[in-house]
Length: 594
Image (spheres, rainbow, N blue to C red):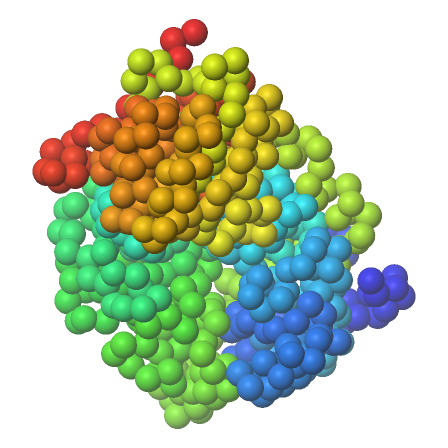
């Protein structure tokens, strides 16, 4: 951590220039004065939020130095800040930014120090994707909560608010002030490959209430929340990371469905909104992605919805935004459309120089840049970054992954597990008659730095609850030999727990053959709840909505009867043989009747 003298020296210039006099909130006059003294190059940099490899701002590992040189042309975060004067940096697990909370705090402080030491240096807005559930960047020992669809199954706005409050406190303690959450998309397409369980559900009003509650939690904790992905990514069968989705909703349907959670987020005072790389012909017939659409971002979001906060693009490295235009045109077109922050371009050098050239050539005015920079600086001031850009190890220890926070996550998770099938009251399992358990099934890579794999987590949790559980991972596409091994192992068990993950033909074969052994089978959908429709012969089925530890432990407590199943489906499950008909409606969920 930097010394107090270093901190004071680094921040003195900014604080003096704003004449903050002990308040964290600068007014627009002060911020405009600050902008007026910035060079054009500094202004361009302020618009970018960029990835950088390494656990340290100045001394990353050699492999991360090599990756930075290859992708960004600099060795370290400090060098990137000095060269490009970026206004924001995004943390990723795969970029080795998030090893542990104390390291993250040091990285955040190093980034702030590198920026504030520059001439006219400004604090950096550090961001990440900490949605919880299947998308997280900061793992254990930080507190990890159930994902959005699980929260939707719980249905309690107070839980969404508590999630935002606790997660926000922990993010702020490690120097992250902007979180790209909550997902405000209404997931009405079961085949959606990119949103799915990241959405609170399929009912617009229910999603809106939970979005607003989570926003209140995060922002009450001093972290900017980000509603995404505007104008709504919930009805697509194409992943915008790899393709260019087209939303065919009418304008009327958009108003009734997709727009509802974003309106709620704006009413809740949302600090930032992220754009979607989707084509939405009813809102803009040009064929441009929403990220580059003036009618959608300026006409609808700014004009009709009255939003004047920060607009951030989804990652500019995604295929959905790169399909139609080159990487040099995308950032310019995004700014012309009404965007403020340009997130993670494939090449910062190309994007940064393209924006600079667009101003020099008159395609973009400096006044247009100033509009966005003012919004960004307002947000930084509101978050207290001008006064308190640094964090402390003491704050990390006091805040991150505390017993109280972890207990709250467990309590919330218990309210989300949904019981969909329970023939002959198989559940809860009786330890006297079903003590010896075999746990098999899909073992996708554990999300968000949790323990994993799922079969191991379930087996350990059930053993701690008084059962004797053995884990046998079978994967998402078990071979015939693996299926045979599981069936043989089932002969020695009194019941079988099987995790399904976006059910495949091979997984279906596994479960059907386990059922055929005559052993009681309890299936747990560890991602999409729609799996249940494919397996009508399973005598007991739970939906956990994710394979993070907190959700799996809650499912284990429900299986053992230590917790009651209280979740209710936040999405409908269609019949497998006739998708036009609903097998289980929104709101469906069984209980133990006691």
